[in-house]
Length: 302
Length: 269
Image (cartoon, rainbow over the protein chains, first blue to last red):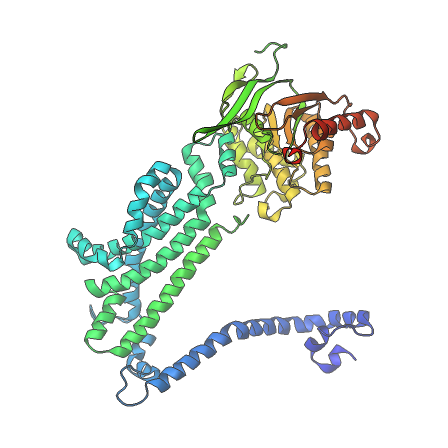
C-alpha cells in the first residue's frame, strides 16, 4: 500500500499506526512537495466552509422566511425581492451623485461618519482626560462622580433640543449629541482603569522617581489601556446609535435623514437597504476599535 | 563624607503603627540595626511580623512613625533609585519588552550622565549579568516566573543602587528555579560587592546567602529578636555546605528561634 497508488494523500497521512510507520513516513516526505500546494488550498477551503457557510445559510434561511411571510397581496412590508427590484440602484451604486439630495448611500454614510468622527474624537479626548483625573484624585471623584452618574442616564435625543438652542445650527448639535452620548462609557472605564493601576507599578514609578507626566504616559495610560479600549468600543457603538436618531430630527445630508425622508415618501424598500448599511457600518466600526485595542494592548496581557 | 566608624545604613529606633479610624495597630517597635557596606542581610520571621513593612520603610515607600533610616548619615524618607527594590511578584510592566523594562529605569536615572549608546550598553550589560541576553525583545507574559524575576533583578541592579532591597524575591518560584536564582544572586553579590537586604521565610536561603540573619519576633509590635552572624567563607557552595558543621549550627539556631521561642502566632493559640 503506497500513498502514490491511491492518488489521495489525506486519508492515509492521517491514518493511525500502520505496520511499518517508518515506511509511511518516508513515503509522505517523498510525496509532500507535490501535495503541499493542494493541501494549503484545501485548508483554506475548509476554513472558508467552516466560517462563511453557517452565516450564509442562516441569512438565506431568514430571507426565505421573510419572503414567504410578506408575499401575500397587501402585505405591510416589502419582501426581499421587492427591495431588490425597487432599490437595487442604492445597493449597486453607493457613490452616485445626481444633485444635492439625490446621492448614493455611500456619501450619506460618509457624511454621518464624519460627524461621528468629530463627536467621538472629542469624546475620546475629553473622556480619557477627565476619566484619568477622577481615577487619580479621590476629591475629583467625590465631586464629579454623582453628577456624571445622573447625566449619563439622560437619553441621547433628550440632549438635542437644548443643544439646538445652544448652537442654533443642526450640524454642531448633532455632533454634540454624539459627544455627550459616547463620553460616559469612555470616561467611566478610564477612571476604573486608572484606579486599578496595580500598586506595584506605582511603587516602581516611585523608586524611579518618575514625574507626574512620565507617570501618566509611561505607567498609568498603558496600564489602563484595556479598560480605555472597552470604553471606546462601547462609545463608538453608542455614537453610531445616536447619529442616526439625531439626523432624523436635524435633517440635512446623512443616513438618518435619508431614512426619515424615505419614510415620508413611502419608500419602504429604501429604508430596508439603509438599515443594512447602518448595521454593516456599525459592525465595521466596532471591529475597527476592537482591533485597534488588540493592537495597542497586544503585549499587555499579564 | 562619612567617617569609617559610622555605619553605611542605620535603622535608628524605627517604630511603625497604622491608624485605622480610632484604633492604632503597632506593627514595628524599636528596630535598631547598623549595616556595613557590602553586607548581605536577611530578615526572617513568620508571616505578619512586619518584615515587608520594614523593607518598605527602608525603601521609602512607607513612612516611619518614629525613628529614622540613615543612609551614609543622611536621613531617607522617600523612595529613590539608590535604594532599588526587587519586588516579590517581579512587578515588570507587561506592555514593555524585557529590554524596555530595564530601559525605562536606565533612561530615567542616567539620562544626564550617560550617552544613548552608553545607556544601551548598560542595559544589555545588566541583562547579561542575570543571563537574560537571549530574551531582550520578549514580553513578560512570554517568560517563566524565574526569568521574570531575573529581569526584575536586572532592572534593580541597573540603577546602580547603594542598597539592593529584595522582598521575598524567590518566594513564588519552584525549588529548582529558586536554587538557580540564589546562586545567581550570590555570584552578583560577590562580583559587585553591593549591600543587599533580603526578606525571606526560608531558613536555608537565609543561611546560604547572608552575612547576618536578622530574626524578627512575632507581631503585633514586632522587633528584632536576635541577629545571627553566619561565619561561612565565600564563595559558598550549596552542595559542600549540606554537611558543613557551621552551616548546620546556623540553620539549627534560626529554626530554634522560629519554631521554639517565637512560634507562628496561629500555632500558639
